[in-house]
Image 1 (cartoon, rainbow, N blue to C red):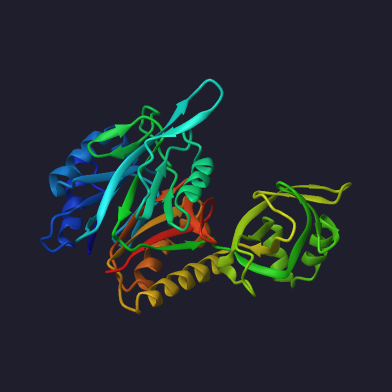
Image 2 (image 1 turned 180 degrees about the horizontal axis):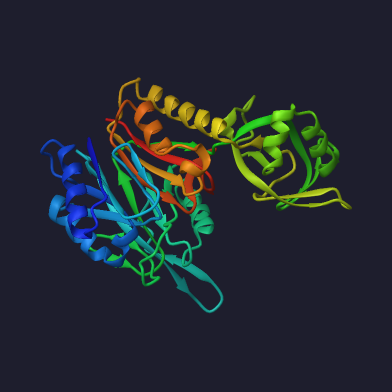
Length: 385
């Protein structure tokens, strides 16, 4: 398997796409591209068809998917604002990439999803939904049911055309709603999810709950137990959780002990002082283990590096063929105070392997084996050689 990527900030969409596509082609060392992923921002969204035309001229990929974005990642750089295009291309060897377009089918009293590919023998799925016309959470649940254990990664498109239409790319066309994606067969993909938050304080077991509402923690009113947990933190940790209260929810409760990646991090979105209950951004059941989490630049950097290091160890310590990167549009310089953080970190931890992607309006990646929609997260699809 070979992967190449390129990035161009040229103002002309066709010229920029050709430049980025040629850079990506160079990384394939003369091998024909089987697939290209394209992410375009800024002025290129005035004429995205020209961008796709340029990519096809440079690479002639039989499979192409991508989207408009608020910012793009490629070639070790991040362009958070302005006009740019990033191209990721791969020669898959014996592997197969099947493109698909999902849309809503509206019945009299129900909705269905059309276009879902056959998931037998699928080894990974990349999914890029439109934020307004697609029920991502519901579809991720359906994918988990139909293809348990299959990693689903991707990101919500974070920009539309200058006319306000969806900017989802499939082949040479724009899709006007839904989601686009790629189903891989015969290709190993290692999912990497960095939620950018560190666990703090004690683990607490839910002893009474109703949907998203936690009524009791460790046999006490949930709000009282949470206050006590916060009071037990050191001053620095208290400052971090005060900026945004996060709760990590264990998804796989069969482990003897839990590490950072075992928690699905969600916000505490409400509290009832009279009832002593907490409302969180994930359903919980009695017996679920939860823990406070804190998010800052230092913990986000450490979490991403640790997650990438584990994936590299899993493939024997060498450089992978490459990676697709989906990072939150709330990260970047706003979180880290420096440019190119996630792009540079991926490059460093994956030994310079080519990587490209975009700043998403929500990131998709698995926790505990099931796919979820995240925020302030970097999800990375790592492709071994």
